[in-house]
Length: 386
Ligand SMILES: NC(=O)c1ccc[n+]([C@@H]2O[C@H](COP(=O)([O-])OP(=O)(O)OC[C@H]3O[C@@H](n4cnc5c(N)ncnc54)[C@H](O)[C@@H]3O)[C@@H](O)[C@H]2O)c1
Image 1: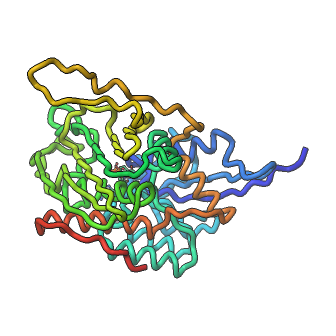
Image 2: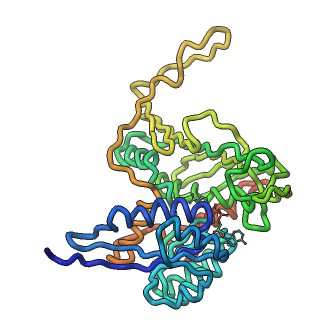
């Protein structure tokens, strides 16, 4: 039997005891890849991720390592960076800590893969991009929504010309995040504190940026009104705190070519729609509504003709007349799918367009959204200098 060639890749996972780090990146991506028998590159050749967990709290790290069946963890980022077997630095710390740690990793010659937003300001994000480019390392940013089954179905529709001319996009994102007093909150408390890098604009606009840019056309302008609807919440220790960051944003984006996209992003909305994120795309030849996994279409030829008349009972059930797009591929976990592409990029030099520059564009849109809200006006989104 021929020997299997294994590319063992040491991966420093910083911030991995957090919600995203543990669930999406460690268990559902890196461990899932190890459990499936690594990333198969060719007959007899595989990539084997070999993680070391990094964080501040030794007890949490040890507990997580045991749960994950891993041996390596440390509270010293410097030690992890000095080990030449570690080739990749991954960061899912809270956003405000990302830049400093990543710059250290770049200095140490590591490839870097980062959660979004890559930084809290465009200036910092571009500084990170320039440092990564100058060092000649490989870099990437999490853009997980692109690999959601619902979004992949939508992309197939766009590529096949289903819509005719695309007119507009309606994005509805959100759900009720409990305040934490009687029912524990589903999100970390720093999300609601501006001074800790919180706010739904910085959290969600990076997602809207890559979805819009890559599916429909570059974002050219933004108008945004946001609010902190709930002013007091209870943190992880049950202590009340004041919310200093916005918990909802109502925004309109203008795309190149004139397509209009309106997104409501909210942590203070109750769900009565198909999914926690729905994207409705209206085109001259048909409409689609994509959720996380499903995508429904209504082509021109099956479009009912509504007539406004509140004096009689509704004659059309508007939720009928929609056709589900069947699955066309196997859909893996979205984070894992992107991780596999990044690992292939590092080992095989395959293309990976989702880099820190693209991540910086997401931060730019958040910044312009905040500017629009503060200045109460429409703001242009210029091409970002590299
Ligand atoms: N791709 C996505 O869909 C997605 C979704 C949610 C969050 N995120 C991003 O992932 C990152 C982590 O978010 P999360 O929801 O996992 O947060 P979290 O609070 O659950 O985890 C944060 C991590 O950073 C560490 N940390 C270090 N110093 C800290 C400090 N001073 N205060 C708080 N935490 C500190 C924590 O120990 C923890 O490991 C954020 O940048 C966030 O924007 C991405």
